[in-house]
Amino acid sequence: MSVIHAPKKPELDARMLVFPSIMFVLLLVLFFRLWYFQVVKAPELVEKAEASREIKVTKPAPRGLIYDRNGTLIAGVRPEIVVTAIPAVVNKNPWVLPEVAKLLGVDVKKLEGKVKDAMWRRYVPSPIYVGANIQAGTKIAEAGEDLPGIGVESQPMRFYPDTVSFTHILGYVWVPSGSDVERIKGFGRSPAEYVGKQGVERAYEADLMGEAGAERMEVDARRRPVRVVGRDNATPGRKLILSLDAGLQKFTTQLFASKGFKGGAVVIDPRNGEILSIVSSPTFDQKVFQGGISQVEWDALMNDERNPMINRAIGSAYAPGSTFKIVTALAAQQEGKFSPYGPIFCGGGYRLGRHLFKCLGRHGAISFEAAMAGSCNTYFSTLGRAVGREKLVEVAKSVGLGVRTGLEIGGESRGDLPTEGWLENRSNRKPAVWYGGDAVNTSLGQGAVNTTPIQMANLAALVANNGTSYVPHLVRAVKDPTGTKKPKPVEPVVAHKVDAPPEFWATMKRSLVRVISNGTARSAQISGVTWGGKTGSAEHRRGKKTHGWFVGFAPAENPKIAICVMVEAAGHGGDVAAPIARDIVNRYLTKAEAKKATSASAAAALSRAPAAR
Image (cartoon, rainbow, N blue to C red):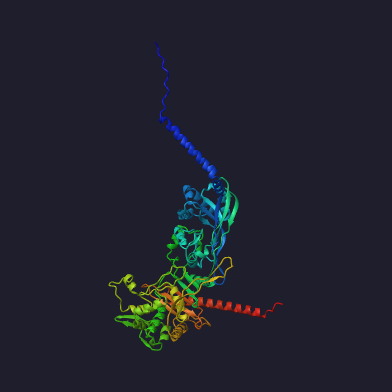
């Protein structure tokens, strides 16, 4: 008999409940999460969604303008078509730069160099070419996405009306590097699109850079601009009024170039330290830096055997030769060993042991003024030995030699003096000892003495000012760009003050006037002008011509100008440096007198005008 079994009810296993439970919990979490976003966070998300439809486009501030003392523009701003590149995008599309270079008509290596320099901010558009013409800019802009990573825009860019005469002073402007960013953040600012790289442009960055503006634009889902919803105007940088005389600067630059000389010239107002002209020759055309210099162009400048990148006026030090005799006389005065009328015998040189320090001639019994006029080495060697090397160094430091003058733009050389530090670190003497002739060499501006033209110009200013010199400076005033605030003048700062009796300074000035009237600087004579100066001819290498120096001040009775001219390896100072100084001083004084006469005529005409009724 068959037996029919009824089916058993399945027993409920706990493991069968795990999965539904987990799913229930997950669905519950998802529900509450959706509820949170759709109800609780809804207003905030809507606000963010609206905000994401806007983008902010930074608008660079126009850089501050720079003028000379007479109101001549020497650094301006004008709109330029700028081609930009996003480095990361361009590097992924290597065919882009050659195409852009073809449209611009430039070497692709120049663009590649700019992209490489901008790699520190890989995803930010960076300028790679400034000054594109309208045709090229239009073609690049129309290409759009066919040139990924490339953009075109108009920006206010720095330009220089004279790209040669102010090169070493102004510096140049370009995209900030990483070190520039850190430097500018150091004074509490964010770097601009373009920053100063050297000279005045760098030294006065905080004043010149201005405040960037911004344009807020609404964009669609594809991030395409729809309309402008807001605009914050950029604030231009402050204006700088330099102490430079642009006409004198250009004249001096051309004067050196016409003679083919290497060297430098510095002209200072001794009454306040304002620099009227500061020239280094040879120079170079600043255009090479506009739009950013390529590596090839940089290498060409650096490898030029004339070394045009060196600012010889402040950055190179040379033996000053006989111009240092001014310091020797001052040291003798301070030691009580100066006698303006007491003669010293010159038999053609100063003998020290077996060595004869030759003189330019046999002067016989000679007093101070005649010795200065004829640049008698025997006379000043005798004074140098009498006061000693240590005193010569002490006095040299007191008038500003062996230290930087403090010029705003930096790049100065300290020069050298025969100090203990020089003996230990730079003399190469074994053993490191002083020789008997060191005081003699120092007294004649030779041996371990090396000075810069700006130091020697300030020495001439100190003599002109009876023992007081000021820190040389290039900026006279800083002006607010809106013109609503009064210009902030740069106050003169005393650099050195040397005490000496008025009789000493009077004697020193008379002796320097004699140098020009009937001494070694007769080539510096100017009709109708009495002025003083000193020549120098410094030996520097066997078989080479001497460095030619001239320092002076004019007019003698009321000095308005102090000058130093140094010409490298060109001959005696009276032959090469003094004539250049003559032309510079004559040009400045002539222009100053003409300006004074014009002002007087205008004032007289105004006084004769009938009064308004």
